[in-house]
Length: 269
Image (cartoon, rainbow, N blue to C red; front, top):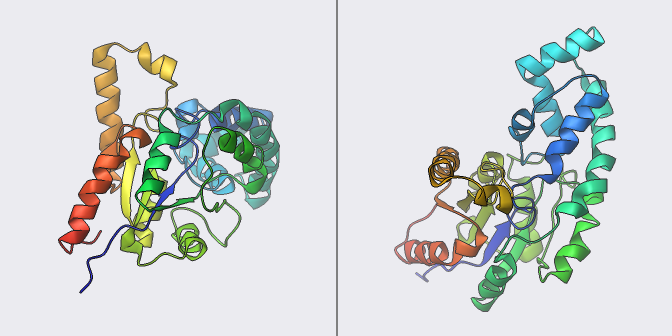
């Protein structure tokens, strides 16, 4: 029996490779709901992060407080047409601001270069639509990040937490089995995407949605606040099922060594 080797790493985008703190969509969700007279908080907006954005809006509208606020303003519970209306407002808003948050996370380009040196392919999936991603791709490329594929929300019949975007990535990259692939993501639903596809999963705690702060905001925390928030972020990703949790993609190499060792021992995710 041939020892199985890793073949690919599949990255999420916002909060994992770009946009430290996954901040681009947050204000837009708040602004989009405010357009319809329904205030939501940043914390509420972050809850379903990682989903396709229409699914994200649907999930928010199903939350009891937001559902009650919508019904109070509009005289009836939100239906499918209302989800579409919010989504139609959200997408152009998000596309307009996404380039302001397209900086690569520190160490991301170097990490990808090291993965390619190991002979690994680089895949990507995202909860963003192609319309939102279009202006991001050239900015990421100018900073040294060009993955081998891109699967967006809306490309397939369903997005996260289903494994369909991962399945498409397997086809795009020509890799199999799923246990030879690592999914790296900063959201619980993105970890679920990887688990449902049968992959190893690595949660990203500090740079992503769960921690939710910019590098400057993170640096302003007291040591006690930092440790409390970091522990909480790690715990959420562990509870989501992540096999490993790291601070950022810059720390991925050691985890890949551990996964390679597990595969050599015949272990599978």
